[in-house]
Image 1 (cartoon, rainbow, N blue to C red):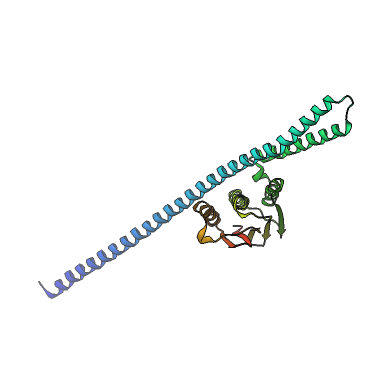
Image 2 (cartoon, rainbow, N blue to C red):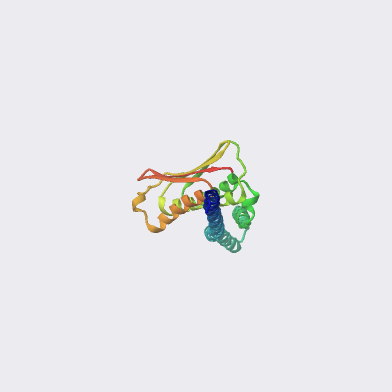
Length: 260
């Protein structure tokens, strides 16, 4: 083969090899990019699925908590008030002269029962969370806690409240509810303080009690699960959660949450 032809053939072969290598490299890059894109989509779907599951779980827990609280309020408050009114009416029936002072007491008892029932009816409205602000529904929850007569609760708000997306608001409120229930069940506290700090970019929520506190390393499995739920739910909506507790000094739950 003439030298010139050999050089041409060699050039063609080298070009084909280079082209093959380049094509293979590009194909690998495309495949890698597609795999990353597919993995990203799968992770995003998993996060969205996890978020939806947590949202549903929070809704169910809130409903269960509401029903339990209502049942207790009807039994402890409304039931007792109406029982007292019934006793007073029976006493008046046995008297020969109408006891107007006792009659006024009966009227006040019935009025109190009506107010309690009206509050209970409001709490049954599933739209109260979407229709009211986070501060308003928190205040309602703390009033319910106060009616238990076990401890005192206080609400403090700093800054102008920013509107949260409905799903975020629901999960934040569930975190608040779960924290309050942990305090009522385990803390032996006399006071709860809830602080909302609305800055230009984020919300800071603090739930503080003056209870017995606890050692994180020694909490029960059930209570530990509740604490992990608080932190994981905060992370799920793009926030950060922390729990600090000192034996015999109380516990503070802190949530930082950006508005967007």
